[in-house]
Length: 229
Length: 229
Image 1 (cartoon, rainbow over the protein chains, first blue to last red):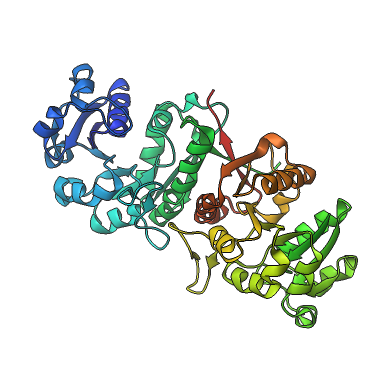
Image 2 (image 1 turned 180 degrees about the vertical axis):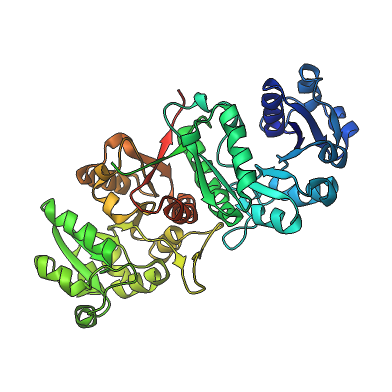
């Protein structure tokens, strides 16, 4: 499969590297490749600049958003939630049409400091906004409820834990579930919540996730839905 | 301990019955006891009217909100979230002052149909509103992330799973954790998220809880935070 990963942050890099390791062809998209490569400072979390990562991952071409989206048979959105709609517009609706669009982003707005607020929230979600803006894409919301290191290596967390999927297209969700299984997720760990509207539920988990991070002091945790005895 | 449980719905009844079974003195509070006892219809979930439950629990006096709150050494708010501030105002700030006030409610607004929306949400929470409105009460938010049957019988759910607490007063949280342990929760299952502001996180879990209920087809589940291997 040819994947386009949109976003050059730690989430995009981690997913891109995993897909490459599984034998996929991967291109990574950014608004301005020259500017992305020119950055020399670590990000707010202390991750090295993209160029440093790219030295070890020169098999992942860096392209503009629309070039990358045109190449990808499946597109993964890992851009910051507040920038997602602009980034996907730059990627181009025609380049997304008919394709599975995996949305990993959360609409966290840090502009008023910590804790971030969600926007949209409650009666709408980023997943739904993306599906409405790109009605011909098959949007699947998934993986947005955990650290990116767990996304691609679920075995980092002890015992059983879950990953949620939501979206309107059953075939797209099936393809995404297969990708998750290839990442190491047991099939039984994938919970299909229903349509893209369920993005409200998983995006609204982020405030608790952030407080758990504060309480536990790390991000190596995930949610497990325990069932009846 | 003398507990006042405010609210005569299934959550209030379930917690009241559990506290009685543990040897506590319990009074249950409602706006209009005569009206509560006169109801003959089941609630929206099909639970029998309060009067039917009260036949088997005549050891739990039904009082007005302010009478109940005056009697209780610890107060448990199980009223509907949209009615909580009015109910606590009727209970009376003086009757809550200096007491542990356990807030189990979620601010779910069903007025525009399903799914309900949360109000407040995101930049505020019901737990914070209650603490602001009754600054002399020691508000502890807990148990609001699961079915009431699991609240008082965690063994219904297989394996390990968690209950969250949040609040400003460490002594109040300690008292609540002891109550939870008496309900059957292992001490290790109680996660202290921090201050009352963390109510945003647990209240915003409800949209996912509701969608999991839809996806799983039952309410006998709970969240478990799985840690690093």
